[in-house]
Length: 56
Image (cartoon, rainbow, N blue to C red; front, side):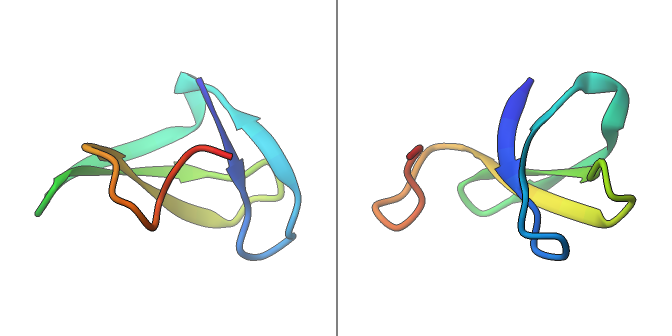
């Protein structure tokens, strides 16, 4: 479970494992694909955190 701000509805929601749609490798870890509560497809980088992507 993690929190995400949707790029479509601009709401911040908790994302649960049942909403995951896939995982893809990325340069610094991987990218999680999931569906927002509003129905929009979203992605979230995971793995090593970079200076420009830190938990708020």
